[in-house]
Length: 351
Image 1 (cartoon, rainbow, N blue to C red):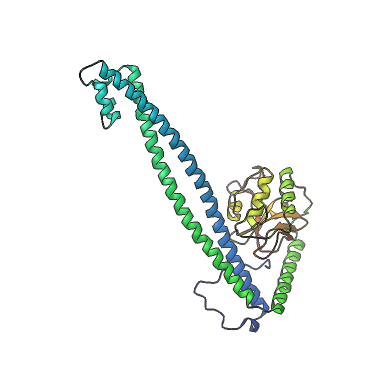
Image 2 (spheres, helix red, strand yellow):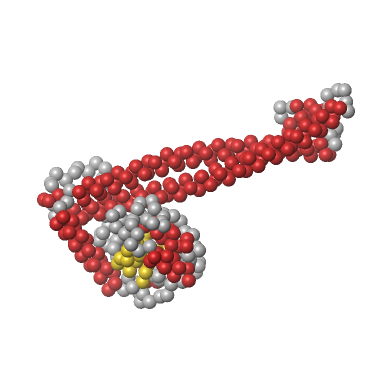
């Protein structure tokens, strides 16, 4: 996909080009193909974001279920202690005592607050009932939270299915266009795209936007980059985080996770939450983010090259940094030094 050209998705109401693919210029076909790839990648990152939320929600449901189970055990113990005190009170009196009435009351806390009852209860009995009331409240609260968390999980699961269907539809559009092209057209498309990338790379390098480009990686950046390089040759697969296949942000997030610095899962979140660095301060291991919506990301290798998982049908590879329109760069292990614009260093827009 040529750098320097900002592509917008085709409107949903766009009228299909009536011409056969063989009647259309290669440049038009390439633009259409790039748009379809970009739409597919945007849908993939949306899916990834939902999957990440769902993963966290599953953990929250499990946490609440465990806490609820513990609370119910505590409530069972509290009720047992209260029952023993009630039996003792009954054995010591022929009448129903205020304490027993408290235990049988629909709202023990309300009864506990009544002054005449508090005056008749021994401290030990009051504490026992207090623990019972507290256990009931905690158990009820956790039960409500667990139900809400489960409802959220089910909602996210439904959204994930919708996102999954969207990705598959976008990829089907790509496959349909590719299937309509002849071998000669496919060869011409590849050559045309490579020419565009070479021109964009040459323009970027000669502009001086990358600075001296002789900086060394940090220790963590070196580990992240070594991991990414070891994945070269493995297939791209949307939604994949390794170890055998990757999508773009799956590769970058796993690389930095193996370096001991966990980062957000999606390219959008990596761009939004990680410290930004100007392109002329890039060092190996930094992340280069592409397109206005931050829908693609790669690891900077140095010398104007990146390691990336490009798109469906391709493999993890080394590519020119200007393979796509650059939005900016971020550094996962940056320390808050030159703070501007809300705590983040401004990035150079090299589209």
